[in-house]
Length: 298
Image 1 (tube, helix red, strand yellow):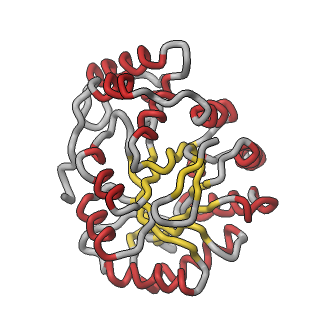
Image 2: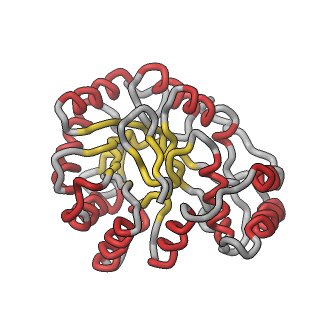
C-alpha cells in the first residue's frame, strides 16, 4: 500500500481508504472487513455521527480496539438528529460541535479523533464560530486535525482563507470532474489534502448497468466507459483504472472507497499495487468526456 501525507498535517494516509458508511447488515462480517483492510495496509477509516444514527461509529469503535493506535480515524459532525427520529437538521454551532465530539468519542471508544470534519456547510453558516469550536477541540487534545466535507466552492474558499483545515472531502470521479475547474488546484496551492469519495460513480465505472449520471446522458456515460475499458485492457479492472484516474491528480491524498464485500475490498486495495496511469492513458481518459462545472454556490 502507498501512503500520502494529508495536507500540512503529520498524518500519512493510505491512498486507498475505507469509507465505513457502506457497512450495514451483518455486523460480524463488517468487523471482519475492517480487520482485513487493516491487515492489508489500509490505515484510514472514515465514518460520521450521522451514519446509522451513530451506530456506524459504534461498529468502527468495536472493530478497531486491538489496533486503534495504528490507524487514523475520521468522523464528521454538523447534522443534528431530531428527537422524534424524523430526520436531521443542520447545526454547525460551537455548542453543538463541542457536545457532539464527546458522543463520537464515546461511540468510537477512543480518547481522540484524528480528523474531525464538518459534514457539509453553507456560506451563511456562523463560520468563525465553527472554526473556533474546532480550534478549541484541538487545544484540548480531543481532535488532532480538522477539515470539511463539502463540494461548495464558496464554502471551500472561505475555509481555505479563514481556518487551519488540513483536508476537504469531496466527490470526484471521471464522471464528476467539477472539482478540476479550480477547487483541486486551490487546495493543492494551500497544501490542503483532498479525500475523494465517489471514485467509481455509484458503481457505473466499475461495471454496474449504464445510466444517466449528473449532467451526462446514458450515451455519454457509455462512451466514457468504453474508453475506460480500452485503457484498462487485461491489466486491470475498469474500477481500478477509475480509482487510478482520481489518484493521478496531485491534490488527492486518498480515494475513500465504500466497501461492502471482501472482493470489493481486495480489488480496491490491489489498485495501489498496480502500475500507475501513464500520461498518455490519463489523457485518453480525460478526453472521453467534457468536464462539467459547479453551477451553484460559486
